[in-house]
Amino acid sequence: MIPILTGVVVVIPMLFLGSLLTESFFGIPGLGSYTIDAIQAQDFAVVRAMVFIGSVLYIVGLILTDISYTLVDPRIRFE
Image 1 (cartoon, rainbow, N blue to C red):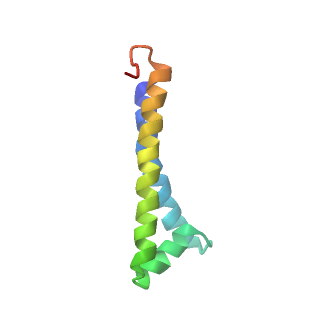
Image 2 (cartoon, rainbow, N blue to C red):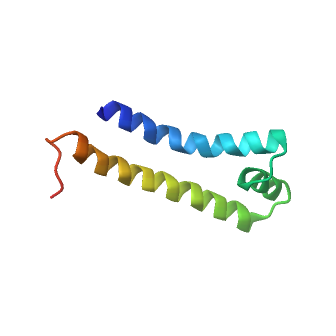
Image 3 (cartoon, helix red, strand yellow):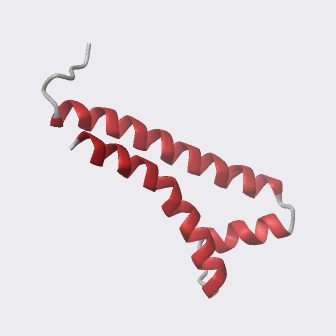
C-alpha cells in the first residue's frame, strides 16, 4: 500500500499541469487557461500565484501522504 500512496503524490502536480494544457487546448475557462493567458501577457503576479498554489498543493499532498503512512503501516508512528 505504501508504494501506491507514494505514486499518488507524484500524480498530483501532473493533474494540475494537465488542467493547464487541457483548458488552454479546448478553450475551457478556468485557472489553467487563466494561467496560460497570464504567461502570454507576462503578468508575473498571476504566474507567481499559480506557482504558489501548485507548490502548496504539492506540500499538502506530501503531508497527507506521511499521515496516511501511519494509518496504513503500524510500524510507522508519530513521535
